[in-house]
Image 1 (tube, helix red, strand yellow):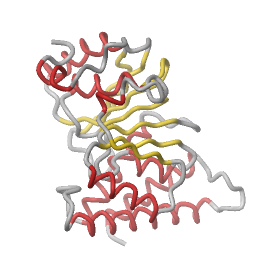
Image 2 (image 1 turned 30 degrees about the vertical axis):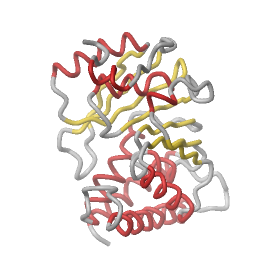
Image 3 (image 1 turned 90 degrees about the horizontal axis):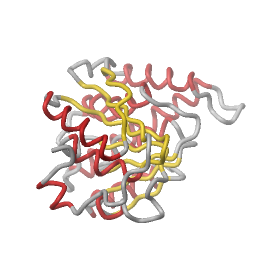
Length: 252
């Protein structure tokens, strides 16, 4: 077993200890082994599809385990409710939504992705990994954010490597229920961008609760999680059309 596999396995075992398998007859060690096997199959499918569909720039098998899977699971160091309705905006090849689903199978996970080829991969890998209670939406965040079926209905909203902070906050806040959380994995935001993000958050009904460094092995390179709370409903005119969001980001 490689060093990256050992690191992922150790964190998976820790997460399994925090949330034991639902079926009492399933031993914790066996459950952790099943999860690790799913991650290895996920990697296999990701790299195979990536040869013909642009899913990721990370093609080193060890880095996939660390910079995709482990980085996604780091969100559970910020929030880890026993039950959760999760939305992953701009899911791409499934990060962070699918790794979270693999280790928290009782969560209801929705993956929102605008690119048809990536949507096809998401559907394929969910079938291969036999993941249930996963909804895959082909669409744009700024459009579906006004749909009654999705607006203000999610316990947890996340988005990874999607856009500048004020922009991704405007994408995310309309989907989050009052009292719910928005968790954003970030790296390298300038003080000016964070300040604008804080101003945008107030417009969007969000409050910054914590800035948590990610210190998992292989990820101690300045990554952090921004944990926001939806303290009031997002105003109805958000999200705006994408041209307006990009031209005049919230918090300007």
